[in-house]
Image (cartoon, rainbow, N blue to C red):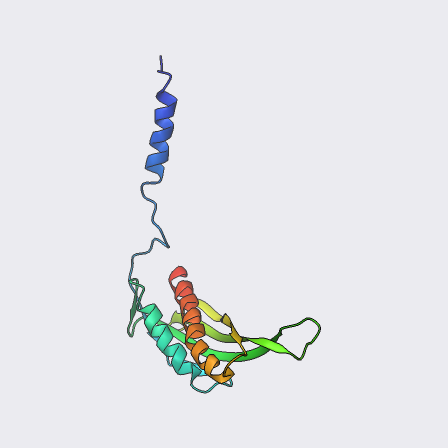
Length: 164
């Protein structure tokens, strides 16, 4: 005869042992070597490719599963666009802009050096920010560019690690 509390103990046992091997994240602890090729710039903002290159290096270096060195994988990045659009302050006056939305886009390909294996190809990553028009707009844009580049670099890192 089975005791009355036996089903409760068996349920608890299966729940506890079923989750014992769960790993947060992708579960891959293998270290991957990625070479970041020089970022190309086809956008209208000169120098943005250098800002994105620095953000990629800094962001990818924070992940212990990635080593930035010449290896089996290459990361190709091209800054494709930078836009600034006025956000109206009032619904009655379309010409009165109180804020601007700036958007930075980059296209990325991650694959083997011999192009036989591609993790992702021509994938677009985008980051946006809202700037106030109260002060010097060009100064605010220069301050926003590193944040936009870091956001795109984080998206690229997450896609690179997640695709393994």
